[in-house]
Amino acid sequence: MTGMQDYLRPTAIIDFDHPDVLKKAKELAEETEDLIEISRLCFEFVRDEIKHSYDYHMNPVTLKASEVLEHGTGYCYAKSHLLAALLRANSIPAGICYQRLNRDDNAEGGQFCLHALNAVYLEEFGWYRMDARGNKEGVYAQFNPPHEKLAYEIRIEGEADLPEIWADPLPVVVETLTKYKSYDEVYENLPDVPLISKK
Image (tube, rainbow, N blue to C red; front, side, top):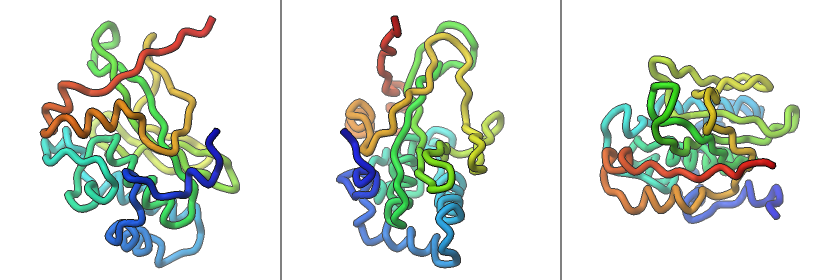
Protein backbone atom coordinates (compact mmCIF):
# COMPACT_ATOMS: atom_id res chain seq x y z
CA MET A 1 0.00 0.00 0.00
CA THR A 2 1.44 3.37 -1.02
CA GLY A 3 1.21 6.16 1.54
CA MET A 4 1.66 9.89 0.93
CA GLN A 5 5.19 9.72 2.37
CA ASP A 6 6.18 7.46 -0.55
CA TYR A 7 5.45 10.35 -2.91
CA LEU A 8 7.82 12.61 -0.98
CA ARG A 9 10.91 10.45 -0.59
CA PRO A 10 13.99 10.21 -2.80
CA THR A 11 14.64 6.91 -4.58
CA ALA A 12 17.48 5.51 -6.66
CA ILE A 13 15.83 6.97 -9.80
CA ILE A 14 13.90 9.94 -8.42
CA ASP A 15 17.14 11.06 -6.78
CA PHE A 16 16.34 14.54 -5.55
CA ASP A 17 18.94 14.03 -2.83
CA HIS A 18 21.52 14.56 -5.59
CA PRO A 19 23.02 18.05 -5.01
CA ASP A 20 22.39 19.27 -8.58
CA VAL A 21 18.72 18.25 -8.49
CA LEU A 22 18.26 19.81 -5.08
CA LYS A 23 19.92 23.03 -6.25
CA LYS A 24 17.69 23.28 -9.34
CA ALA A 25 14.56 22.56 -7.28
CA LYS A 26 15.40 25.37 -4.85
CA GLU A 27 16.23 27.74 -7.73
CA LEU A 28 12.83 27.14 -9.29
CA ALA A 29 11.11 27.89 -5.98
CA GLU A 30 13.15 30.90 -4.87
CA GLU A 31 10.65 33.54 -6.04
CA THR A 32 7.54 32.11 -4.37
CA GLU A 33 6.23 29.95 -1.53
CA ASP A 34 2.97 29.14 -3.32
CA LEU A 35 3.00 25.37 -3.94
CA ILE A 36 0.79 25.58 -7.04
CA GLU A 37 3.10 28.17 -8.57
CA ILE A 38 6.18 26.09 -7.67
CA SER A 39 4.52 23.09 -9.31
CA ARG A 40 3.91 25.13 -12.46
CA LEU A 41 7.50 26.37 -12.56
CA CYS A 42 8.89 22.84 -12.14
CA PHE A 43 6.52 21.53 -14.83
CA GLU A 44 7.38 24.25 -17.34
CA PHE A 45 11.11 23.82 -16.73
CA VAL A 46 10.99 20.10 -17.51
CA ARG A 47 8.53 20.53 -20.39
CA ASP A 48 10.39 23.37 -22.10
CA GLU A 49 14.06 23.13 -21.08
CA ILE A 50 14.65 19.36 -21.12
CA LYS A 51 14.65 18.14 -24.70
CA HIS A 52 12.66 15.02 -25.59
CA SER A 53 15.22 12.44 -26.75
CA TYR A 54 13.35 11.37 -29.87
CA ASP A 55 12.12 14.81 -30.91
CA TYR A 56 15.69 16.12 -30.87
CA HIS A 57 17.48 12.83 -31.74
CA MET A 58 19.58 13.21 -28.61
CA ASN A 59 21.77 10.85 -26.63
CA PRO A 60 22.59 9.63 -24.05
CA VAL A 61 19.61 7.61 -22.85
CA THR A 62 18.84 8.97 -19.38
CA LEU A 63 17.03 7.33 -16.48
CA LYS A 64 17.75 8.99 -13.13
CA ALA A 65 16.49 12.50 -12.46
CA SER A 66 20.08 13.68 -11.99
CA GLU A 67 21.10 12.26 -15.39
CA VAL A 68 18.18 13.99 -17.11
CA LEU A 69 19.16 17.30 -15.55
CA GLU A 70 22.87 16.83 -16.33
CA HIS A 71 22.38 16.00 -20.02
CA GLY A 72 19.26 18.13 -20.65
CA THR A 73 17.44 15.32 -22.44
CA GLY A 74 15.20 12.35 -21.81
CA TYR A 75 12.29 10.33 -23.06
CA CYS A 76 8.90 11.07 -21.46
CA TYR A 77 9.73 8.42 -18.83
CA ALA A 78 12.97 10.09 -17.78
CA LYS A 79 11.40 13.56 -17.87
CA SER A 80 8.70 12.32 -15.49
CA HIS A 81 11.43 11.12 -13.11
CA LEU A 82 13.01 14.58 -13.07
CA LEU A 83 9.70 16.38 -12.58
CA ALA A 84 8.80 14.09 -9.68
CA ALA A 85 12.23 14.76 -8.15
CA LEU A 86 11.95 18.56 -8.46
CA LEU A 87 8.49 18.53 -6.88
CA ARG A 88 9.46 16.21 -4.04
CA ALA A 89 12.55 18.30 -3.33
CA ASN A 90 10.11 21.15 -2.67
CA SER A 91 8.03 18.95 -0.33
CA ILE A 92 5.24 18.56 -2.90
CA PRO A 93 3.94 14.98 -3.24
CA ALA A 94 4.44 13.69 -6.79
CA GLY A 95 4.15 10.37 -8.58
CA ILE A 96 4.30 8.86 -12.03
CA CYS A 97 1.33 7.92 -14.21
CA TYR A 98 1.17 6.07 -17.49
CA GLN A 99 -0.99 6.01 -20.57
CA ARG A 100 -1.01 3.18 -23.06
CA LEU A 101 -1.00 4.68 -26.53
CA ASN A 102 -0.93 3.54 -30.13
CA ARG A 103 2.59 4.42 -31.21
CA ASP A 104 1.57 4.87 -34.84
CA ASP A 105 -0.18 8.00 -36.03
CA ASN A 106 -2.83 6.06 -37.89
CA ALA A 107 -5.95 5.47 -35.83
CA GLU A 108 -6.26 1.71 -36.34
CA GLY A 109 -3.86 -1.17 -35.81
CA GLY A 110 -0.19 -0.71 -35.05
CA GLN A 111 1.75 -1.27 -31.88
CA PHE A 112 1.14 0.11 -28.42
CA CYS A 113 3.55 1.57 -25.90
CA LEU A 114 3.57 3.24 -22.52
CA HIS A 115 3.73 7.01 -22.20
CA ALA A 116 4.76 8.55 -18.87
CA LEU A 117 3.42 11.66 -17.17
CA ASN A 118 3.10 12.89 -13.60
CA ALA A 119 0.53 13.45 -10.90
CA VAL A 120 1.09 16.10 -8.26
CA TYR A 121 -0.91 16.38 -5.05
CA LEU A 122 -2.23 19.92 -4.62
CA GLU A 123 -4.07 20.61 -1.38
CA GLU A 124 -6.78 22.62 -3.15
CA PHE A 125 -7.49 20.10 -5.92
CA GLY A 126 -6.17 16.67 -4.89
CA TRP A 127 -4.19 14.63 -7.41
CA TYR A 128 -3.66 16.51 -10.67
CA ARG A 129 -2.06 15.00 -13.78
CA MET A 130 0.36 16.94 -15.97
CA ASP A 131 2.50 15.93 -18.91
CA ALA A 132 5.97 17.42 -19.38
CA ARG A 133 7.00 15.38 -22.45
CA GLY A 134 7.53 18.60 -24.39
CA ASN A 135 5.22 20.41 -26.77
CA LYS A 136 5.47 20.16 -30.55
CA GLU A 137 3.08 20.28 -33.48
CA GLY A 138 -0.12 18.54 -32.35
CA VAL A 139 1.02 18.39 -28.69
CA TYR A 140 0.07 21.24 -26.35
CA ALA A 141 0.25 20.18 -22.71
CA GLN A 142 -0.41 22.85 -20.08
CA PHE A 143 -0.56 23.29 -16.30
CA ASN A 144 -3.94 24.77 -15.41
CA PRO A 145 -5.43 23.04 -12.35
CA PRO A 146 -8.02 21.75 -11.89
CA HIS A 147 -8.30 21.40 -15.69
CA GLU A 148 -6.08 18.77 -17.30
CA LYS A 149 -4.41 19.52 -20.60
CA LEU A 150 -2.30 16.47 -21.40
CA ALA A 151 -0.15 15.77 -24.43
CA TYR A 152 -2.35 12.89 -25.66
CA GLU A 153 -5.98 11.88 -25.50
CA ILE A 154 -7.22 8.31 -25.47
CA ARG A 155 -8.68 7.74 -28.95
CA ILE A 156 -9.01 4.07 -29.87
CA GLU A 157 -9.51 0.64 -28.42
CA GLY A 158 -6.33 -0.63 -26.79
CA GLU A 159 -5.33 2.81 -25.56
CA ALA A 160 -5.93 3.63 -21.90
CA ASP A 161 -5.30 6.02 -19.04
CA LEU A 162 -3.80 3.71 -16.44
CA PRO A 163 -5.32 4.75 -13.10
CA GLU A 164 -2.37 4.11 -10.80
CA ILE A 165 -0.07 6.78 -9.41
CA TRP A 166 3.31 5.15 -8.90
CA ALA A 167 5.88 6.29 -6.35
CA ASP A 168 8.63 4.80 -8.53
CA PRO A 169 8.76 3.98 -12.27
CA LEU A 170 7.55 0.62 -13.55
CA PRO A 171 10.27 -2.05 -13.85
CA VAL A 172 9.62 -2.43 -17.60
CA VAL A 173 10.45 1.26 -18.07
CA VAL A 174 13.62 1.02 -16.00
CA GLU A 175 14.67 -2.07 -17.97
CA THR A 176 14.20 -0.30 -21.32
CA LEU A 177 16.13 2.81 -20.32
CA THR A 178 18.92 0.68 -18.86
CA LYS A 179 19.21 -1.89 -21.65
CA TYR A 180 19.27 0.35 -24.72
CA LYS A 181 22.09 2.82 -25.24
CA SER A 182 20.80 5.21 -27.92
CA TYR A 183 17.59 7.17 -28.47
CA ASP A 184 16.77 5.22 -31.65
CA GLU A 185 17.22 1.84 -29.94
CA VAL A 186 14.80 2.96 -27.23
CA TYR A 187 12.34 4.12 -29.88
CA GLU A 188 12.40 0.70 -31.55
CA ASN A 189 11.77 -1.01 -28.20
CA LEU A 190 9.37 1.26 -26.29
CA PRO A 191 7.93 -0.50 -23.22
CA ASP A 192 4.36 -1.72 -23.07
CA VAL A 193 2.06 -3.53 -20.64
CA PRO A 194 -0.98 -5.63 -21.51
CA LEU A 195 -4.36 -4.23 -20.51
CA ILE A 196 -6.33 -6.34 -18.06
CA SER A 197 -9.83 -6.73 -19.41
CA LYS A 198 -12.68 -5.77 -17.08
CA LYS A 199 -15.40 -8.40 -16.99
